[in-house]
Length: 327
Image (cartoon, rainbow, N blue to C red; front, side):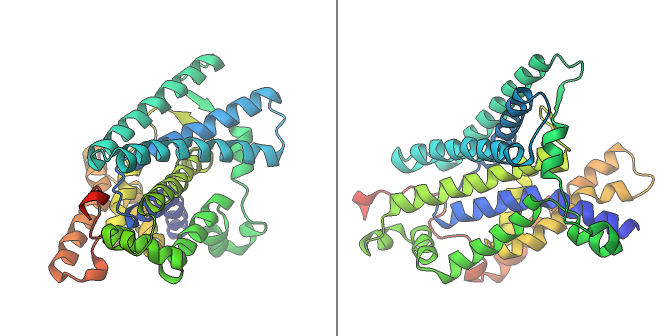
């Protein structure tokens, strides 16, 4: 069934975007605009590849499911956490320009991933410029039991890996924390007016560090999912495409609400691959269709700007450094 296949692939395409947008929403709620998300997702992917490669090599391909999942997962989280700490140190402690820092982090992350990806390819002695970690990928890609027996319903909703369902759970929990807990209230206060939050006794620097690092770790899982699930454990340099930037666009489309990012990620994923289901398209036509998520975001941004509803606007202090001495 073509529709079921399309929806299944749209969800798979959207999961990395959901991880990236959820992480960026948490970061932006603290007032930090992290344009380094594409680089962080890339580093999270190569971190998982490095962990999986070293593990598979140490056991000669006889992998056990538990370490085969935990080692790449831990490496992806640690690598992306380090990227978040770098961004936080530069923008929160040193008060560097957030836009420049984020773009530099993306450039660094892509270069870092390509360097180590190329190094691993040389270690394998492969004739093609890619690394295949099929054994580890199979451990990540295990779907729910009985999915194949439930027809289109099982194909669409039950045939995904645990990382796909984790992305949805994380987005829902993030929405709950931001809107229903004291921690979420303090975080939103820091993003809206850090001076007032500081005067109320909230540690602005701590919340900015915390949100940025947690957001970076979540975004890094998007890179891990792409490599281990969507790409079947195959890493090739620059194979990640523009998914990191789509994740940032999704933040705007979801009006900074993680729960809306779930539906938005599926929509963006579908728009990104819809050209594969249209017959007769040449290469130029395919590239035009790949622009659809960005076009939709621009139109939506224009619409919410005209309506000027406060709940649809970004945090008031987004992208601005906080100087306590000016409070």
